[in-house]
Image (cartoon, rainbow, N blue to C red; front, side, top):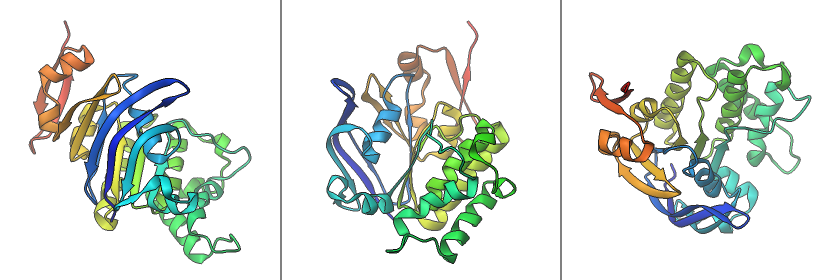
Amino acid sequence: MSSLQTHGLSAGYRRTTVVSDVSVTVDSGGWLGIIGPNGSGKSTLLKAVAGLVRHEGRVVVDGRAVAGLRRRERARLVGYAPQIPQLPVGMTVTDYVLLGRTPHLGPLGREGARDLEVVGGFLERLDLDRLADRQLATLSGGERQRTVLARALAQQAGVLLLDEPTTGLDVGHAQALLDLVDELRRELGTTVVMTLHDLTLAAQYAERLLLLDGGRVAAEGTPGEVLTPATLSERYTARVTVLHTPDGSPVIAPVRG
């Protein structure tokens, strides 16, 4: 189990700062959803936590500053599934997902029976086992998205960063994917940080939400505290009403003008 903290985290590209002064704590086994309008800095924040973009401030996992760790050691702590991955040409689904085992390989860098078992399990749970020998280039958008998640899960890191994991998925596969993430979170104590455009899905799966606007934290709290008509109207410039499911989860419904 791994806790995650950011302290005064700012990040951007070249001379442009996209995210400013984000401090947040996610307890071990928690699920934080990062939401916000387009261009608010959601993906950049995840990349900063993963150490993939220029940033200032601190990222701490289990009390250890990530910046001081070697790449392999960092990969054992933090897994990352990008929204738009760069997929190698000529690689099969199985071989790609096996890349997630790299931080755990021995000195010879050869996969063992345990690595194949882990990968096979995630392929099955993500409905990818029938595609195991397919070339990545032949996959649909939704199949690619699930394959990228399988690689991140195979890493078995304590903190899992998911950037728009349901992009390209129909509602059934989106629910199945998030159900699996939640199941694994409960089984393994994995800490999940996820960006998501779908506010209703974010509210139903994340325990807490962080709302970004203009690269800064505009609100943080439970879904019920963050997803209010007033806040959504101000931050998204949207006409919405907030309904509730039988268990009390917010449902964001647009209202025609």
